[in-house]
Length: 150
Image 1 (tube, rainbow, N blue to C red):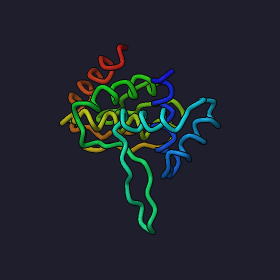
Image 2 (cartoon, helix red, strand yellow):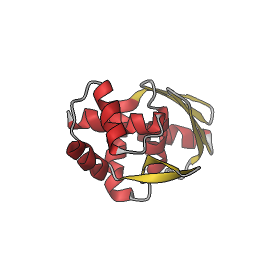
Image 3 (tube, helix red, strand yellow):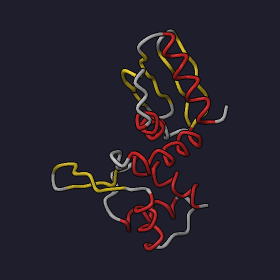
C-alpha cells in the first residue's frame, strides 16, 4: 500500500502544481487513498520531496534529484512500476510507461546517470532518449531491462 501511495504521490506532483500537504491529501483521497496529514508528511520526507519555486510567489512539491544514493532505490522502483515496454530505433530508445508516468520514469532514468544518454524527452506515457551510438543504445536498453527484471 505504501509503495502504491508513493507512486501515486510522484504521479500527482508531476501532473499538478501541489503546494500544500492538505492539497496532496485531498488529491490522494480523490485517487482512493485514505490518508492523514501525518502520513502525507512522512511520505514527503521518505520521498525527499522539496518545495520548488514556480514564480509569482507560488511553489510546488518536487523530487529532490540531488539526493542520489537514497533516491536511486526509489527511482528504480518508480522505473519498475511505471515501465510498460522498450524499443530501439538506431540510436533512439522509446520507452512506453503507464499513463501519466513518463516524466517520473524519465527522471528515474536520468538519476541513474548513464553516460551514454545524450538527452531525454518525456510526454504522458512515452519517453524518447537520444543515445550516443547504436552500440550504446543496446547497452542502455540492456541496463534498463536488467533493472526492471525483464
